[in-house]
Image (cartoon, rainbow, N blue to C red):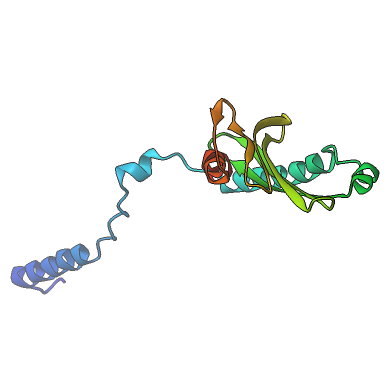
Length: 162
C-alpha cells in the first residue's frame, strides 16, 4: 500500500478488524452445575460388574441344594426353581431372587417360595412362602414383615431395580 492514501489505509484496517470479529469461535458448550457435580460413571466397569454378577449368580444357583428328586417323586411332588439376578450399583452388590414352586399330586396343592439372596456372601435376606390356599406362611425381608406377595415385591424392589 505504498501509494495508498491515509483514508484508504484506514478503510482497509477497519475491514480487517471487522472480518476478524466475524470469525469468533463458537462459545463453549454450556454445562449445568448439577451435571458438573455428578462424578463420571465408568460405563465399562459397571458393564463388567453386571456381567460378573450374572456369571456368579448362575454358578451360585447351580450349587443351591436342590430337592432330592427320588424323595420328591415318591411323595408325588414336582419342583421347579428359577432365579433372576441383578447388580445393584448403589449398594455395589449382586442380588438374586430365587423362585421355587412345588406341585403336590396327592391333593393338587401347590406352594410358591421366593428368596432374596446376596449372591457373593450367600446371604438369605428374606423370604416369601405361600400355599395354594392363599395363606402367606412366611413373608419378610430382614426385620420387616409383610402379608402378601405384592408387599414382598415392594420390599425387594430397591435391591433388584437400582
